[in-house]
Length: 164
Length: 109
Image (cartoon, rainbow over all chains, first blue to last red; front, side, top):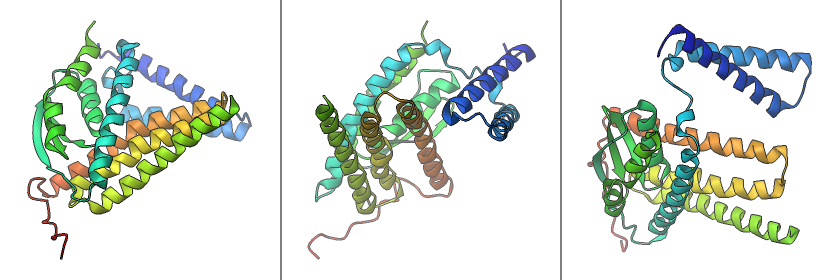
């Protein structure tokens, strides 16, 4: 579905969203600011087109409300691992056991794999170093953090977002 | 009710500040670049979430709250990208994560 038609539709949709964003954030309707806004929005769309941004399906409509329940789960994970990392930092012995390992992403779409890698990085204590052919290279601060990620709950949840 | 909101926002701001501070300590205490990124991620995830949530309670139901929510969303989307760029650059420059740990001096020296 990478026809010229759908690319144009995506570009127009992004342009409309950008213009709404500009008007909402600034709340000013002077000609100079409106002109600058129009210029910025058009320039953004042009640059995004040059970067090949519209060649993929960029809007994650298909995730729907499941995305919000995933964010809720992720927020809980962030809170828990932040507490763990804060305890390690404040421990006088600094009990770290850095690990590097690979996990396989079940989700196949590049956007989904990016989401998994970014979720790993967002969670303190684990850091995605590289994504290549669906294999994510992860650096973990502790062995327990590595074991938790290797158990694969985050991977399962990201893969489940795409199921229809 | 105002008092309750003020207390909640005060608690959120203090906790957020504490996480930013602990992240700073961690960035100093950790032995190498990769482990320092872990400590720094305390500030740009948990610290940012708590501080912005605290300010949102102060701003109340207004356009400012929506703007703060947008700031938080963009921050949470871009900060892992920045961490990833930093770690990838270190990896490409040849800093091996398994060999990068510098031996710590004995605490009683």
